[in-house]
Length: 400
Image: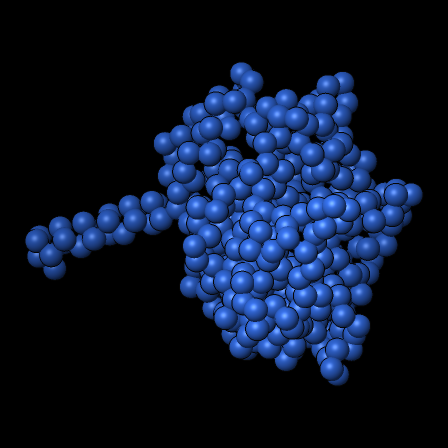
């Protein structure tokens, strides 16, 4: 190789490195949050990383993509999350009338997350076709459109929209205009719905790991001969068919039975299956204990994922790990949590996701204070976020 060739080869290499370093961007939000923080070591540390090249972070999980601004579970939402450096993306998995797997947060949310009500021929097939609100009695509008109401071909004609509805609407058009005021319709002009298999292909292209959730059916199972085990197995089979390594997949479910099925029947996938823990809010009398955490570990579960409030409490005006956290760690369970930046502005105490630390939430910058405790004191392996840029920036700053 002559000097000229060597020079151009070096330039190409430097350009490649520069492109890789600039492939991810976090935009203005992390810096907006940092500006709101109280003065202290954490703020200084985060400020010191402002010029640090952004790298993809597996600690940062795109919850339904980036649904704070993009229609959830759409191609556009997933790509946005990946561009923010999320190293893991989520497809919640439901099924259609012809038993095909698709990405939807719920089997019964098409009326709030898609434009199905703008398609009269499809809308009349909904489990509960649109019934207008009654302004005189105050009765709210009623409608329920399920993925299982439609074939895959019909499903693919829909467009994703921002999740929301106007419950007092008297027309379908009014009903669809219900985006929460802390989100935006700016990016909802397109919303490409995806099958589970298509999400796998896209995630492979984006170079991210995958964390699908098997959604609890709202129909009686078996459905047209499709059993719960068939459903759980089909999810796994679509990863195998795509040649995805089990180490790149974290299958999830709120149903303990699904987790145990994967552990027994698909152990290579089951060993990092994630039990989504809802016990603390589904059963008001439930309390965590070391015994019930150890029991989960004995059943082969290695990952547990409660809502973030379950992991935190307050002591002497400080946010600290909860008793739940201590029991989970003592039982050698890896912890993932959800969902950051899903509450809108949190200066009023943070709402449902921050309920155990609401006295410590005073302004928007406290997102980073919570994130810091979850990362450093709780030791979570990953955090779901509706706007992954914030979590990516944090993980990038602390070299996680």
